[in-house]
Amino acid sequence: MSSRSPVPSPARRLDSMDYSVLQQCMHCGMCLPDCPTYQETGKERNSPRGRIALMRGIADGDLDLTSSFGDEMYYCLGCLACVTACPAGVDYPKLFEAARADIEDAQVLKGQRKFWRWLAVKTIFMRPRLLRMIGRGIRFYQWSGFDRLARRLKLTILLPKRLRALEPTTPRVRSKFSNQLIDAWERPQGEMRFKVGMLTGCVQDLAFSNVNRDTVDALLVNGCAVYTPPVQNCCGSLHAHNGELDLARSLARRQLDAFDLNQLDAIISNAGGCGSHLKHYGDLLENDPVYAERAKEWDRKCKDIHEWLVEIDFRAPTSSFPDKESITYHDSCHLCHGQKVFRQPRELLRKIPGLNLVDLPEASWCCGSAGIYNITQPEQAEKLQRRKMENIARTGCTNVATANPGCHLQLENGFKLTGENGSVYHPVSLLAEAYRNEK
Image (cartoon, rainbow, N blue to C red; front, top):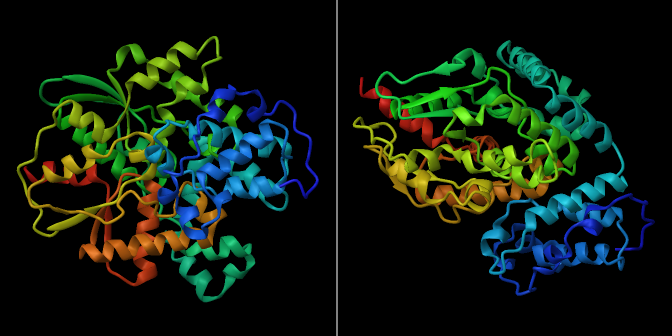
C-alpha cells in the first residue's frame, strides 16, 4: 500500500473518528460469502474485512493514504450486504464514507475523474433546476430521434470512450417531471388519516416521474394527504457515498428546510438508495447546532413507501392483472441491507390479485448498478448484471419488480443485453394500477 508517494491530507476522518468504530470488526469472515467483489477475486483486500484492516492501518499511521487505497475503496460497491451478514454490528457505511472523504481530500486519484466529479457531484446534482434543464435536453435528443441518427452516423465517436459505451443505456427522460404531475398539496377523497411529505428524487424525477405519481395515488387511496415541494434538492446520497460529506450536509439542510416536520406524520421515499441515506441525517448533522434535533426527528419520520403502507395497514386492491401473471422481485441493496425493508415489498405484491410472486435466487445480491458504479467500474458492474439476469431467467418470469431507479435501469438494460423481452416495474406502480383498475 505504501509503494506510491502519499499526498498529505489535513484533518483525516479516519484519524479523527471514534476509534471504537474501527475496532468493531472481529475478522470473523462472516461477510466474505456475501461480498460480490471478494467472491469475484478471492482476494482479502477486496473484502469488507480486508478494507477495514486497510482503514485501520491508515488511522494508526502504519499505512500511507495512496492511490492504491483509493482504487480499492472505489472498487467496493457499497452494497452493504456485509452489514446484514455482520454479527458484530460493524458500522461499515460510516467507515466507507469516511475513507472516501479522506481519499478525495488527499486527491490521490488523478486523471479526468476530477473534471467529471466537479461537473456531476459539485455542479449538476447541487442545482435541481440545472438538472431538469439537462433532462429536457436529453429528452429532446432522445425523442427527436437524434440519438439513433448519431449512432448510425457514428457521431458518438466524439464522446469519451466510457461515455460512448454508456450512451445507449441512457435512461429515457419522461415528457413531464414530478412537479408537472403532482400538485403541491393533494388530499384524499375520503377520510384523511395522515399527512405525509413526498420526496421526488433526482433520477427518479427525470426518468420515473410516473412512479412518483403512482406513489402519491397509492397514498391518497389509503387516506394520506400528500405535500410535494415542486422543486426538490438531491438527498445527498451521491455526495456522501463519493467522499463529499460537506456537500451532503448542505443538501440535508436544504431538505429539512423544505418540509415542516411538525405538520407531517411521515416523509416518504420510494427510492431504495436515497431512502437509506435519508434515514441517517441525524448522524450526518449530529454536530450542527441548528439542525441536529430536526435531523433526528427527520430520521424518525422518514419512511420507505412499502414500509409506510404496511405500517398503516394499506387496503388490498380488488382488481387483477391478467397480463402480468408471474413476477419476481429484486431487492435494492440499500432498501434491504441499508433500510432493512425486505418483507414489506413482497407483502405488497402478494396482496395484488392476479400477481403470482416467484422467489428470485440471490434476490438481495447486487445487480451492479450501485449508484454510479456501472460508470466507474463498468466491467465488474456488467458481470453482476449478467449474474442477476441469469437468476431472473431461472424463475421463468419476464416481469421484475424493484424499488430503486438505479436497479430499475440496470435490469432494463440487462434485458436488452441478453436479448430478452422483459419488463421492470416499481411495486407501488403495480399497486396504483390495481387501484385504478377498480374504477
